[in-house]
Image (tube, rainbow, N blue to C red; front, side):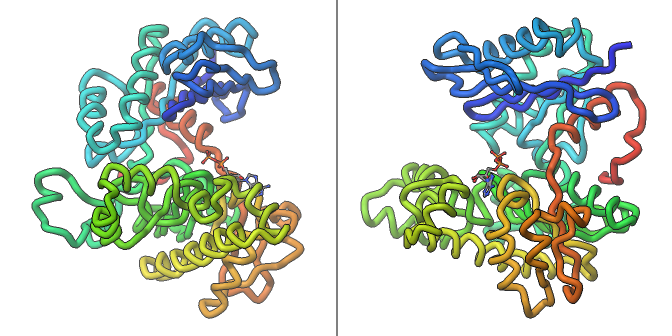
Length: 403
Ligand code: ADP
């Protein structure tokens, strides 16, 4: 019996495709990148890069990627199920959903909240529906896990009509990753996921932090859009909203300010040279003052948010670091935790340096008040798991109760 699950993750200029089996093992993957550009290409894991038709769009790139996976024996004639990452599910989706016309319309309705993301997610869905009309397909939303936030955590203190008329509120993102690492932390600590309280810091190109109480998201740093919260690669995170008006007085339009805060700020804005933490750390070690500043602001603001997340918890089983930076940068973890001596977080330098590998992910010192863990995120495996559970009608044995 075919037990392959195809996971599709359409980003603004890339499409990630991954094949899993029912046990959640990754069998193959490929990344189509530079979509819409003259040098669009497919980078298969462990294979040679293949040129895509110049200016290939998401649909063409995805179809070419799937064809490559099939031609190279990584994907059979049709998978058992297909899971799509969908960025914004608004208030309509509290969990993953089996795709049908009604669900597709609801995703289209959320597009005004995520104009850069939902339309490309839908392009991916349409392409795979055309290729595999009989295969059950599932949408897994970045926002769904955060639908359990209490009202006081998701309402913004602006005129209520903005929420009533337009749905202006905190939604939160990276939900699949936060849910996965919280469940994995509970497993490693030998606790049922439904009783675990975790602060999870997802630090990649985008960064967000979530407080999880009894397996449910109760506060998170990203908001209406993925711009709010922590310092990120090119996104500013929190700034004074008065900045828009101030910059307008300098002749910079709100549209330009929006672009600057999304694409020219964060690590890139402060360093002036790079949005990539690896390069930034190298330059900082060589004495680059702007890169040192970017590193310090990143870690300070992250620590401040870890403190803020504690407000939503009455106990803490673990602080978890994940994402490319969280999993790999001992310097970021050490500097961040150094700001958190008062609440009692302490890191063990040797464990931190080997990313907790010798201690099942633990990097906390023996006198730390709370465990600190490094857990590699597995967003795609999580999407595959939810897709197969919904497609086959079998309950997901690992999924926490998130209704
Ligand atoms: P995305 O959000 O696009 O999935 P990732 O989770 O892969 O991104 O994270 C990318 C970030 O992780 C980049 O800033 C990169 O420099 C950083 N990173 C990866 N490896 C290391 C490392 N060894 N040390 C420091 N930062 C790293």
